[in-house]
Structure formats: C-alpha cells, structure tokens
Length: 164
Length: 127
Image: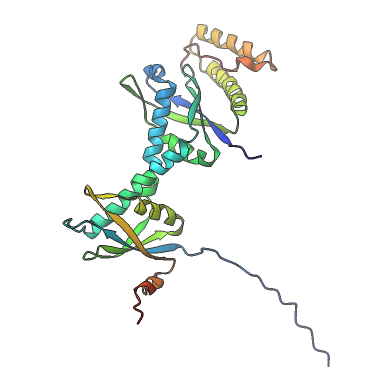
C-alpha cells in the first residue's frame, strides 16, 4: 500500500529576550522557517519542503514547536533550521534560535520523546532553582508527573516562570 | 611429466558508473540585440546568481568553474562537480533575465570528458 510518509521535527525556540514568548505563534514560526528554507535552498527547496509543511503543535510557555514535512525533504528542512534568526509577528521582531530536539515518523513518537525530555528538564530546573518557592513549585510538578507512570498525559509541564 | 596445475585464476570485476569527478558543459547565452555582452566575471556572476535563485545559498556554493569564455559569441565551457550537474543545468535552464532583458542559456554539449567537447558532430557539414 503506498502512502505519504511524513517526518515530524520537534524543536525548541531559544531566545534571550523574554518578550519573544509572546511572539511564538504558528503563523510566525511557519513564515520564519519557510523564509529560512527559501534563503538556504532556493525556490526548488522551498517548493519541495512546502508540499506538506505545517506547524502541528506549538507551546509558547515552553517554546516547543512540532513541524511536519514530507519524508523526502526533511533533510532540507532540518538543515535550514539553524538559519532561522528572528521571529516576526505584529510588526515586532525578536532574535531567536531553533534547537532541534527530535525527528520522528509520527506525532506519537514525538510526544513520547517530549514527555521524557520534559521530565529530564524538570530535574535540571530543580537543580538550578535559586529560591525556596520556585523549588517547591518545581518539586510539586515533578511529583505530579512521576507518580503515575502509565497515565503520562500530563507530560507537557508548564514552566512556573523559573529561570532556565 | 606432470605439470603443476596453475592456481585457479581469480579476478575481480569492478564496474564504475559515472565515476568521473567533473562534468563539462559548453553553453551559450542568447541575448537580444543591443545588450552589451558580459565580461567573464559578469558571466560567472550570472551563473552563480542563477544557482542562488533556484537552489539557494547551498546551490550558490556549488563549485562551478568557467574554463574558457568567448565574449564575441558569449559562449563558455563550464566545469562542475558531477553531483552538481543536475542543479547547474536546471538553474541555467530557468534563468530568464539578464539586466532586465530576456535571455536564454543554450547547452550545446556536455560530457564527463573535456576532450569530447573538442569536436561536435552537429557542426559537421555533409556533402
């Protein structure tokens, strides 16, 4: 049976400017990525990657972005992601960078990876906590996600504003 | 007298497909009348900008060399690494404008061997 295979690229938006978070929207990220592909790979690369390109999932609090593209052109997409330099929305631009975390064939594998990744990030945040209140918040979210291993629906933990 | 049997011959066959490192293209740029013919540097700039338009920065970084250039006929011999032949040829095909005037690249000959560009059977005159 012939079907179209997709690749889902999980990335993280990293920025020094805290106001960049309000700029993380699917249209802004999609346009920035398309623009980067157009610069790096030209008209041909842009057309190749745009066939089935969408931003499938976006989390502005953690800066997680899930992009989809065809399996034949995911290498073009992944090689152009380091060239995304700024996000622009509502006439405001903020410098940022995209870190690629994982490339998967289905949304489910990317979600499994994201859950494990967020758990590890919470542990790292706990080590880097500076005051007692943040420590308690992070410990509470850690406990709430580790006790029930099977029902890991609450995988997308939100940052409680603790510094990265 | 028994002769020692020669050892069983063992041989190895290697087939190399498209093993040439470079491909050579003889191209001609057709320009409308009244356009000043480009110099060799402008010609190379044109080729690189065509690659940049179609294949982006990665395409513009493709190592293309202009081996010879004749300004009178605006024809040149280009050399490109074999893996980049398709990108170069497609970029030359889709280039439409030079200094805002219509132009076209005609590829006259192509070969993995430079010597093959010396003779062109299309130019033969049959009596």
